[in-house]
Amino acid sequence: MSAADTVRDWPHLFTPGDADAPVLLLLHGTGGNEQEISALAPELDPRAAVLAPRGRVREQGMPRWFRRLGEGVFDVDDVVARAGELAGFVTAARAHHGLVGRPLVAVGFSNGANIALATAMLHPDVLDRVVAFSGMYPFADRDEAVSLDGVQVTTLNGREDPMAPLESVTRLVEVLRDRGADVEQHLRAGGHGIFPQDLARGREAVARAS
Ligand code: MLT
Image (cartoon, rainbow, N blue to C red):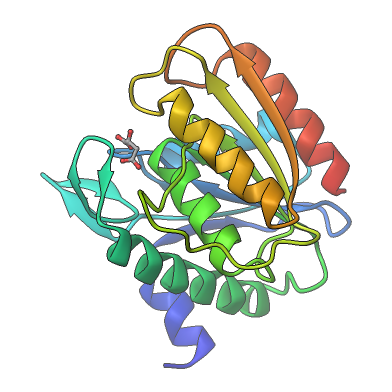
């Protein structure tokens, strides 16, 4: 399939932003969509380009990025396969929309954070930076990450989040650091969600990509 076909076949929202600003790859959570997650863009960088695809897995009609067997129990083979598909889309969309050379920051919430992290850990050349709101380690008991030198990751989590348990977040950060990623970890009180202080940290992380 050509790059143009890959881009055309994948529902996504795109706005070009200013040519000297970064590209935000915005990845929604379970049941979200590209429109809803794009509301974050003006909060993070109003000048950025926005590339927001829609997750291609359906769970009771809700879009997501990969299959799961239950809450927090991921189908890791599917995570790996879907991360590869997303990496292919990002590469094709960068070329198709004229974004080559602009820094690309993947910003995801919940399931969107998990696919952003998986994609960065398996295809680090495709993304420059990840901002993960309420994300966790996406590979269950498997060790899938490759060398991550130069990959910049900001994790933002609540200490009392049953959907992204602290144990999994700790493992995520350990694996990322062990493979050479540059990780900034923020933990706050509370549970799943994007809290105002998370957004402020996310904005700082995006500003560092410019
Ligand atoms: C979700 O509902 O999105 C989960 O908490 C995270 C995931 O399934 O990846």
